[in-house]
Length: 307
Image 1 (cartoon, rainbow, N blue to C red):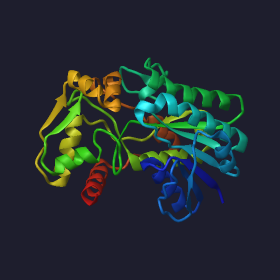
Image 2: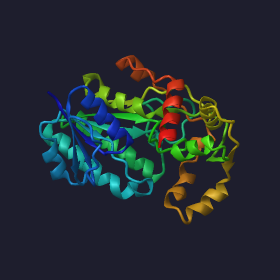
Image 3: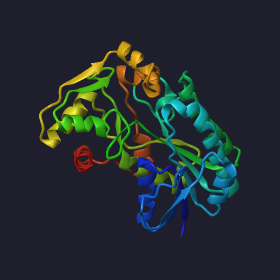
C-alpha cells in the first residue's frame, strides 16, 4: 500500500489527505501545530516543514510528497525558500514524487488565456519566489535527482477558500450587506474549486505523464467578480448584492496598517485585466473535468450557512 505525505493542513492539504485516505492509502499530514483533520488512515504530525532532515526522515517510504503549505502572503520571501528547499531535499533522499501546489502569480501579466507552458515572467519578488521553486524542482527533475510536478490553480472558491469569494464575502451576501471587492467588477476571471484542486494533485502524483511538467487544475469557464457574487446570491435565494470596488488609493492607505493589503497593488493586474487560465492539457492528459458550477455554488453556500 502506498504511503503519502501531505505538507500543510489547511483547506487543500486536508482535502488531499481526505481524497487519499478515501482510497485506502496511509497518509501523514504535517503542520507546525499538528492540526488533526480526524480522518481514518490519516496521522497528524507537528513539524517545521523548513527542517530538511526532519521532513526527509518522515518521507522515507512515501510514494509522494504534496507541498500544500500556505505561508501568509506577506511572509513568502522568508518562509517559502526553506520549505521549498527542505521538500526538495526530502524528495531527493526518499525517492518520493514531489507534487507542488502552485498558482498563476509567476506568469505575471499575460495577454490572453494562461497555459502551463507560459514563461514565468512576473517581475515582482514574491511571484519570483514561486517561479524559483518550480525552476529548482524542474532542474532537479531534469538532472534525474528527483521526480517532480506542479499543479497550478487560480483564485479559490469553495468551502474554506481563502480568496475574494471566501467565507466573509459570502456571509455578507447571505445577510444582504454591501460587498466590497478590488479591481474591475465585470472582467472575466477564472475561479478554481478547492475540491478540484485536490483531485488534480492526487492525479498528478499517480501518473508518470505528470512528471517534469506543470499543469492547470480543471476550472469552470471564467466569471467576473460581479457574476460570481450574483450567482451565489441566486443559488442562495437572496437578493442580488450591491457590489462596489475599493479605489486603489484606499487599498494603498489601508496597506500602511495591514501587511496583506500592502501587497495587493502589485497583484492588482489580476483584477484589472482578464485573468483566464487554459486547462485543456490537464483535461486531455488526465481525463479530468471541473465540478459543475451549480454544485460549486451550492456546496460553498451550504458550508457558509453551517459555519
